[in-house]
Amino acid sequence: MTAAPSTRDQGSRRRGRMRLEPATLSAAVALIAATAVVTWLVSDGSTRTVTTTVTSSSRVVVSIGPVAASAGALTDFAKVLQQPVYWAGPKAGYRYELTENSKGDVYVRYLPHGVKAGDPSAAFLTIATFPFPDAVAALKAISKGKGSKLANGAFVLPDRSNPKNVRLAFPGVPYQIEVYDPSPSTAKAVATSGRVRSAG
Image (cartoon, rainbow, N blue to C red):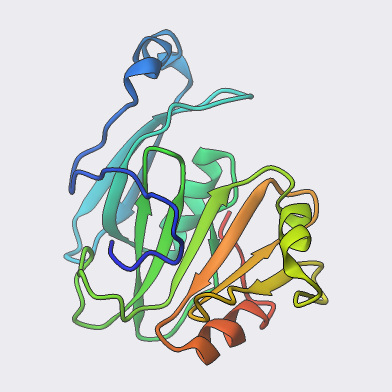
């Protein structure tokens, strides 16, 4: 996926393949009994399956996508990951593209009819979820009074250097969310709408 809503390195992705980090291969074998499987519908009506090992405290990270996923698949994937996967809720006439990189960063893009998963264009609304300890405190520390608190408790901070990106975080949740849209006004409207929530 191009034009990520963050300057963070998304890591390498191999389209259509899943890749375990080398350091965790032995852990994956040892924990095979804890393996969970997610299957979702892709755009052509076929199914795709992702297998990821989960324990109560950690999981083996896999690189996934970009692949087309249903709204229900996003929910299932978040449950398997045992972490939030943020999106802005369903949007009529759109499909969703799911990507996870080897760092555990997860991206959900909104694709209009006729656009295939993996399209290189930066023209689509994207919601990214990054592991980020003390995310609210970190945003407030750099906000310089420019952030705002929503009714749902989220702290929202537009990116002054790139107004197409708006960051937000929820109290007690160790993840930062970024809303990207090619229109800065749309990015801000989505981020402050209260619709951004975990799919799981």
